Length: 84
Image (cartoon, rainbow, N blue to C red):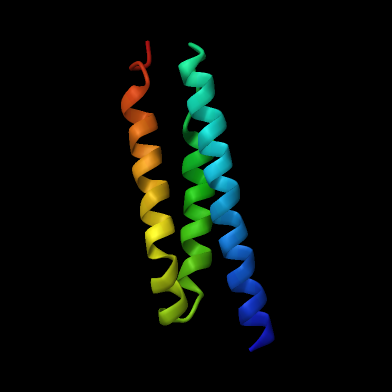
C-alpha cells in the first residue's frame, strides 16, 4: 500500500513538472522561438503509462489534471508555425 501511495505522489509530481515544462515552452513560443514537441510527447507517453499502473479510483482523481495538460499541449501545438 505504501508503495502505491508513493507512486501516486510521484505521478502527481510528474504532472506538475510537465505543467512547468509546458509553461516554459509557451514562453519560448511567445518570444518567437521555435520548439519541437517531440520531448513533450515522449514525456506525456511516460506519464500516461505511469497513470495506467495506478488503481482506478486514484487514476480517476488525476483525470482533471491530465485533461488540463492535454488542453495546454494542444493549445501550444496550435500556436506553432508549420515546419518548413
